Image 1 (tube, rainbow, N blue to C red):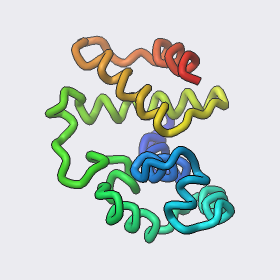
Image 2: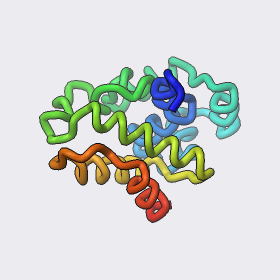
Image 3: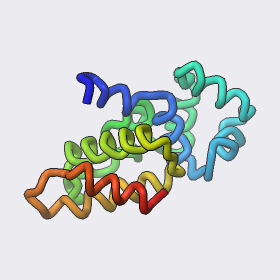
Image 4: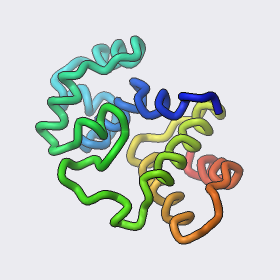
Length: 149
């Protein structure tokens, strides 16, 4: 992995768009466009340019009670004021590693998962490894990603 790619994965426009979809409960980008009151073309253009407008992040944060930090950077909890995920048995460091591995596998295999399915996969992988001293094995994650997609 290239140094700094972890941050690039978490803050990419595509990752931000996925988090906006999850936070709003939309099923896809068309649903998100409707929630935001924007055209699907506006979402496509933002993702293509690699810049999600800050007002979209702030609007979703305000309307849905989501954390702007989570929407923008993928850090912390999705909901403002939610307990730290480490209190739920999921260590934030492990979640970050799993997200990074899953994103890299999806990119390298040209696969896409809907945001809700990707989130479910990431939580499942974290739960599988949470009680284990074993490091997250990218080969095992690859098999799970192939099953999920």
